[in-house]
Image (cartoon, rainbow, N blue to C red; front, side, top):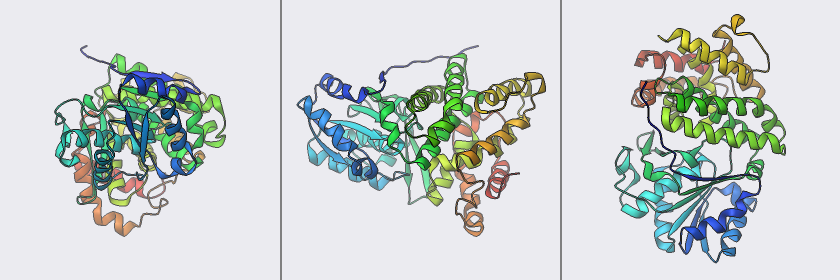
Length: 394
């Protein structure tokens, strides 16, 4: 068995750890920050709180708070221009996955120029980028510890990734107090996304003993907390478990990649602007059902049991467990979290869906995640999975 790993980051975790920002910013020996965030965090005053923390260290800051749910090439261009014009020399990525993705992209284009599409794929970032401090305010993407930036190119209706270890922020601050600020719907969408990161990396063909440790612990943490976290936004223990689970899941999929759920959800978000976590959750039960027939059936049955044990409220012995029980449980979990059962329930018309389904399947097949999905997948399989996920799951 051969595998390799590295964790080259500095992570600070704990309630109130936003207070560490001045200290960490000072260690970068920079003088002016661009805070990249979203409109909601600006509205509720958290961006100002971040700016005030920097001021305590004598560091000036400006903010760009126009990131959207599925950040676009145009947003990256605007933020990059703003960074250059402002005279900032480092970035504070403050928010959910979207601001963090934009910050990573800006860190590339502000340093090396061009359009972020020039860096699409892996290995195209030529060297170190603008220094970043990442502060996630959702328990979901794990972007603070991943080497990916995912951006939407509306000219192609395509979500693409830029991948490079140079995109890893110098510091990550994970403060559970911050994730209590997100609305219930966002908490559900981001929380289920984190769980899917853990699940898909756990059953990935590229999984290793190293990644599986993080995947399984993430599943245990998220599975035990996600229902409480979504329903009780002020539950400190649940928030802490979710944020730690999201962190571990991010480390896991950085090393093991994901699977069909993520490969297929990106085109749906690109064509219909559906929230990434919602698209993932809708696809999840159908893909999990499809993967039951993977070649490594006995190994997968063991892993499905471990996943079920983590996410289900019901207990069942290993001897009485059947893999089909997991997909049924995930449908129930989606329902508990208020996630639509099928793309139709998410507001997508059947005609519009069918008009682009071939294009979505084509784009999904371009994803490297398809290659590590536990069951070999053809374009015809993707089309069938999309159609099964459109209507109410049964």
